[in-house]
Length: 214
Image (cartoon, rainbow, N blue to C red):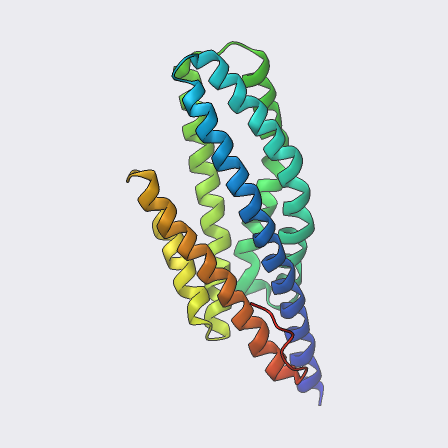
């Protein structure tokens, strides 16, 4: 009976964590679309004034941190906290990525202010963008590895395929943006559906029935 109770507690923790992560990803898609549209506008602005484009990216980064950090904490951090409580060895790598991202967020905010308020050369701007991109990609991959392990534990093939496709997207960003975007969108959608698969698998184990998750 003790093992059964422990298994049930673990499943409930994972279920709650997956629910938060899934909700956070839906919000992230909306924020990502707004970021993408704004980036396109800024890139067009750069055709007429590089200085204005750099300042615009600084303001965008400030907004990204101000909006993104609360979402990251409320959904992703708290979601992975539930997963880590269930199985630290399996899901701790994802929590590591989230924690580091939260820890460096003040630096990202300061950088945004720096770009927005101080005239910068294109070389400095590009260097900062490259460094930020590399750090973000490494942390993103840590989170994706944890999600892949989640898919493996519950035989959620769509989640695993979505993770692989998203990781592939990370490493082919040198291709035309449209191609990378299409692959990335498909990968994210598969991850969302895969998280729904995990929730349904847990619901069957707990005997609580489907709640209509995607």
